[in-house]
Structure formats: structure tokens, C-alpha cells
Image 1 (spheres, rainbow, N blue to C red):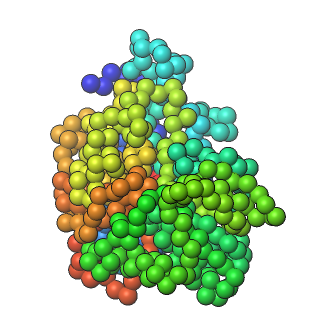
Image 2: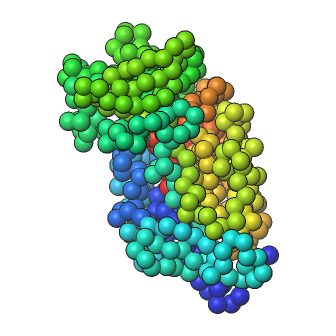
Image 3: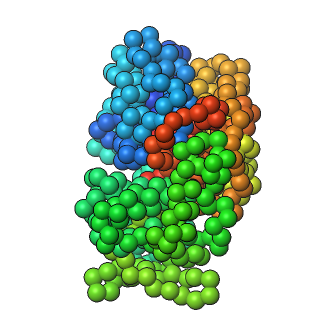
Length: 476
């Protein structure tokens, strides 16, 4: 039941993050006639996606756009890209997110350079209860200003908080010290970051699709610069579930990715460390000395650069004064966690969900998009669109629409149960209407440009990181 007073009711809904899910929320709010502010920390929309913009998504355009946003764009004469084409991250931004952000209904309410550092109830700390539901939210920004809101949708993603390369979920000793020589996500080693990696010994940490993207790019670089060495460190003990379904995969680009990496491993084009858990990082003769635990003993590996593709986690510090109900290990909403637990779920077992599962004790506060999944690697971009459709319906008082499932995804392709949280089966799989799919822990779902997209691909749904993001996945 909404207990806001009249003055608070007139305030806007604050949406944090102008990525795909945040912009979809803006479109839904526009359609419902609810005032809103869209706050983006960067100076452009899709700031996180731009950092992995060179990566090609596994899923075609038909699954990468929100239906309400698409309809609003088409009313202005916008022409949608061909449904069957697989966009890169840059193309997703250029052909969809930027035009959406420029709509007259959205542009005046979009603020750039608005980094939110805290969210709470105005003049109330988390411990105070009496009158709390009638108090407006107050969002404090890095520039010292603040904004009042009647409700908050946090779609800020997880891109700025990657998991460490150290084992056990904590940074290895030396990881912070040598951070300038460690990249997280999918650096553009063939273009913008080419000089950084040419002729270097590079350690890639992680076993999902993001790691494979980096490895294949580094091997392409190696052909032109033979001095470039690639070392692949995996925490798992077997490669059995790493390479995916190959030709049997319903998403051809995803299957090709695994097949190409398998061939490179078999050809001995890269050094494989497995299992290998990083314990510390030091320096010796100008090189990074990565000290780790292998199956039987310790091992030290000298490298020049490290690329971490081990997933992301939510930044909860800005929400310290919000009453959250989080699962103790996934850091996702408690009601949602059992549905997305990567220890139990694989492709086709994560159901659509909305406002009810995403609710917290703090009335009218929601986390949506990648951040709503906490540490679970099972997020799909299309699922994020369904989340904000349901959330906005709930804020508008249309509880029947909020409870209704409107996510329609076709049957998934090849899937396998994950054996470690860092490697779910895929970031770009799809699901049935009642069973959306799990994404890869690394979240980045791009792959090499396919020669074509067949009907099988169009029967799969879009999923994101890592640098870890992409493939229909979103960090915003």
C-alpha cells in the first residue's frame, strides 16, 4: 500500500544508470506518465558498454531491445536494425541506446555526470521506523548536490566492481599494489590497448566466455607479434564444461568461440594453468610474479600483464542507509536468490520475475538489471527489461500488470550445469517463457562475427561482463 503524502507523491522516480535497463525504465515511466530523473555517472549513455564495445553479442537484435522503448522509437521514424543481425556493443549504443536517450520524452530528464554516492530516506537513518514510508528518498551525488525522489530504481550495474583475481573472493596480496598492470573485463587488445599487450606475456584469469574472447584476441595479436605469449589460468580442475556445445550450440557465434579456444589449446598456442589459484602477486626483475596454488604444489609465473575475467559483484556501499533484504551469499534480493543460485541453476531454469521478487523492506526501492542478481552470473538483458516493466507497473499502482509475466523467450540451446560460480554455461543463452537462462559468470557474451545467423540463432534469447558484459547481458 502506498502511504506517501501528496508532496512526496509529486516527486520524480529516480533511476540510477543510463544503460539498457535504466533507459528501459525511463521508457516504461514515460508510458505510465510518471515523472522521473535518469542519473548517469558518465558523460554518455551506455558508459559501461562502450568499454567492451568492440565485442560482438551472441544474440540478434530482436532480443536486445525493450518492446516499449522500441515502440517509442518507431513512432519517431526510427528504423530498427535487422532482427537477425548480431550487434557489437558499440552498435548497440549507437543504433539503440543513443537514439532512445535523445527522445523528447527522455532527454530533458537525463542528467550526465551525476554519480550517486548514497541513497536513503531524507533525514532518516536506517534505524528509524516511525514515519519512514512517508519520507522522500534523498540521493546524494558526488558533486555535493542532492535529489529527492518518491521512489528509486537502482540500475547502476556491477561494471565498476569486478571480482578480484585472487582466490577466495578477496584481492590477493599485491593485487592493489600492481593494479596499473591488471585489466578487468575484455580489454581491446587489437585496437585501443594494442600497444599495452603487444609482445608481452599475458596471464588471463577466468574460464568463461569473457576469458575466451580475450584469449582469441591475444592469439590474433600473437600472429602479428610472435613475442606475445598467452597464459590461461583456471580455478577449475577440468575443461569438460568450459568449451560449450560447439556446433550443437543454438547460438552459432557462442559455439564457435568455444571451438576456436579448444583448437588453440590442443595446438599448444597458449600455456594452460589448471587448477591455479592466485595467492599473491609480487615483482621480480621488472616482471609481475604471480604466485599460486596448483593441484599439488605452489607455482610462480612471471608475466607482464594480467587480465581478470572473473565476474562482478554489486556495490552496496551507496545503499548502506537503505533497508535491504539480501541473500547472505549471493547479495541478491532474498526472494530472488533461490531462482538464480548458480550452484543449482543452469540454462532454462531461471524463471521470469518482477516487482514482487525484487522488493525490499524499504518501500518503493528496487534494484534492477545486473546489480539485482548480486554475485550470480545468470542475468539476461531481456530479463532486465521485464524487471523494470513490472517495477514501474507496481509504482503506478497497476498490480495486475506488475504480477503478469510478459517475457517471451524461445527454447534454449545447449546448456550444462556449472561446477563453479565463475563458469556458468553461457552468457547468451535463452529460455522458454517461464524459464529464462543463466548467463556466464564472466558476463561478457561477445564472440567473433559469424558468417550468418540461422533460424536456430533466432530461436534463442539474448543474455553481458565481463570485460564482462555483453551478449544481451547488461551492467547497467
